[in-house]
Length: 282
Image 1 (cartoon, rainbow, N blue to C red):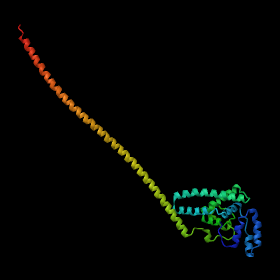
Image 2 (image 1 turned 90 degrees about the horizontal axis):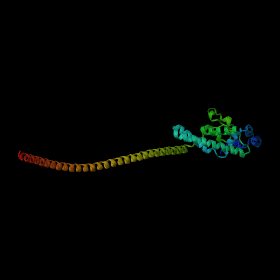
Image 3 (image 1 turned 90 degrees about the vertical axis):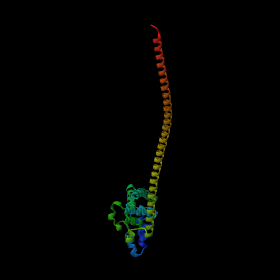
Image 4 (image 1 turned 180 degrees about the vertical axis):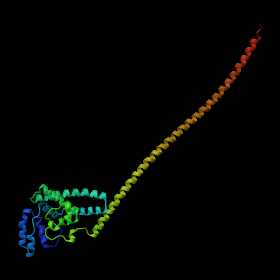
């Protein structure tokens, strides 16, 4: 909705700047003819809006710019806080919102019998973007009395008297900020959301570390179990080898004894044979 100024000429201007451009002049003259002399002159001085500005006024009357202005405040807060992640998210949201609102403005203009040319559509999008990017531009747009479209790239040279019909923007209107309580609540919510995101990131990182530690512990346990199994196998094999060695030593001792016995018997037999040969007469 358009911001109310309480000025009767501004109220007339708001109504006139919603009319289709080809109906503006006749309606203006009719309203001037029924107004007080002082107001009549000011109403008569109102100039027909540029088509793109008229489409934006329709959008304001339709109540579609509230979300854009709220986003503007959030963008400025993010810039003040140097919150890069929030800026990227809001930047994407801003582009989507501007495109959606520009499409809605074009639809409203078509419904009013004046489809927008491509150049007017572009001017509407630039004006909405300017309102999102700059508080003064937002204040001008929200009057619903826009005469000319705005350009986000030329806001430093913005002359509200040139782009807004009726009363000039006052200091309060020029900077439509939220009241302190709402601002404090929004900043507190933003801080809480940021803290929640940080906590979630920390929890995720800690969980990754826990999973990694669990995997490492499982691998270490499996490796230790494997080594213990191999030690058990080696010990069993060693015991078998020791037993086999003992048996081999016993067998060797037995064979050595048999060898000595055989050698002794062989020597005795040889001696006996020699004595027998010696006993044979010549």
